[in-house]
Amino acid sequence: MSGYRLRDWDAQDRPRERLARLGPRSLTTAELLAILLRTGRRGEHAVALAQRLLHEFGGLPGLHRAPFSALRRVRGVGLAKAAQIKAALELAQRLRLAEWQSRPSIHSPDDVAAMLQTEMAALEQEHLRALLLNTRNHVLQVVDVVRGSVNQAQVRVGEIFREAVRHNATGLILVHNHPSGDPTPSPDDIALTRQAVQAGALLDIRVLDHIVFGGGRYVSLREAGLVTFHD
Image 1: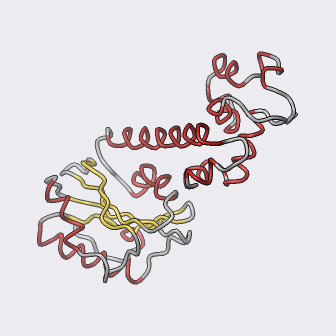
Image 2: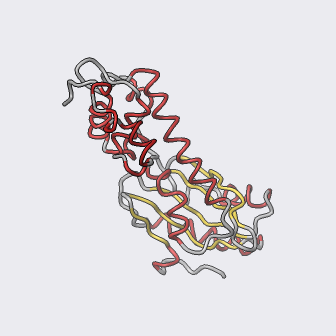
C-alpha cells in the first residue's frame, strides 16, 4: 500500500474524511500524524510516512524528545513537516498543563504524574522543577530550579524557594527526571530533599514531596518513606 496516494483511497477510508465523520478517536496515531503531514513522498503516502516516523523515533514520546534537526533530516519530512510535528506536540503539552492548572488542587503523586510525566520524559538531561502551591494545593506555577546534574552539592536550596517566595506559595512539590530511565532516588536526591524540607520549615513553606520520573514510571519519596515531610 505504500505506493498509493491517499487521494486514490476510497473517500470513506481517508483519514481526514473519517475524522470528520467519526471523530479523532476513530483514527490510529499514524493516521492522526498523517493529517498533520498532509503529504508523503514519492512512493510513500502520508500514513506510511507517519508509520515510519513513529517506528524510527519510538512513538510519540520519541518524536517529542527528538531534536528538530533530527526530524527535518528524515526522508520526506524537511523543515515544514518537522515544524508541524513539533508545534502539534507542544500544543498537546500546553493543553495538558492548562487543564491541570485549572483544577483546584494536587491530591496525590498520580496527579503530579498526569500533569508532568510526559514532558519530563522528553527531557534529555536532568531538570529539577518545583510545583508552587497555595494553601489549597492549587498549582500557582511550575518553575525550573536547575538543569543538569541534580545533587546536593550543585543545587543551592535558596534557588528552590526563590520563586516560591515571589509567588507567595505556601507549599511546593519537587520533581525531577532521571534520563537513565531508572526513577530510583539516589542518595543525593534524598539528601537534597531533606535539606529542602528543613529550609522550608524555616520559611514556612511546606515541602510536600519529591517525585522522580524515569522510564515511564515515578517514585514519590513521601510514599517510599525515604524522607520525613512536614504536613
